[in-house]
Amino acid sequence: MRYFYLLLLSCLSLFKLDAQIDTSFWFVAPKVPAVIGTSSIGLQIGSYTQAVTVRVRQPANAGGVNLVFNLAANTSTVVNLTPSLAAVMSVLANAADTKGLYISSTGSVSANFIMESAVSKENISIKGRNGIGDDFFAPFTSSINTLYNGLAGNSAFDIVATEPGLTTLLITPKGNLIGPRPKNNTFITTLNQGETFSCQEDLSPEIRFHLLHAILMAMDF
Image (cartoon, rainbow, N blue to C red; front, side, top):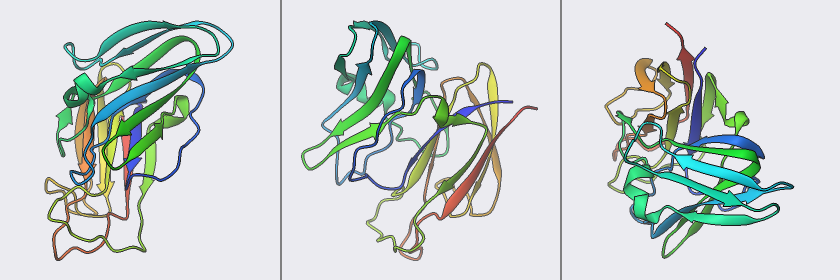
């Protein structure tokens, strides 16, 4: 059975989440609305009772992020990824990309992704084993109208393939996606390890509501 990591971002949250403690993490940096912008991005890594060696890399991008550093026990550090922003931020919709980040450690750590702009600061908890699976139901708001701002992709979810070899995904969106991908139509796409796929809602003046939810499955064929 193939596994992948799902990052759901319907809007920038207003609270900090507690990161999971683990030794292995997959992540893809979400697209930030142009009206907010991004001035800096980074990874906040924290150790616990033992010193660790941490590696951050992009398995699907040989020329991308590839860092190794040591961290003393009970300390934390912020890894500046701003120079690699274009290599890690998932902007492209409806196509395979190479934006997946893999964080591994010789001991237990927690990891958060930090984004800053002139008007906002966001801290996203990165999940370890709890963020990986082969069957996801991604919910979105269904009670608040989406105001069309002339730009598509207000709500989105991003997928990272975590298994070696080829992962086949079956995705059933319950709202129209950029592609176009009509709602309620299941489509299939394939990803190699570390590759990413961004599903972004397709808004227009006639479509007033958010993508309600989506069903995702990874299959072996």
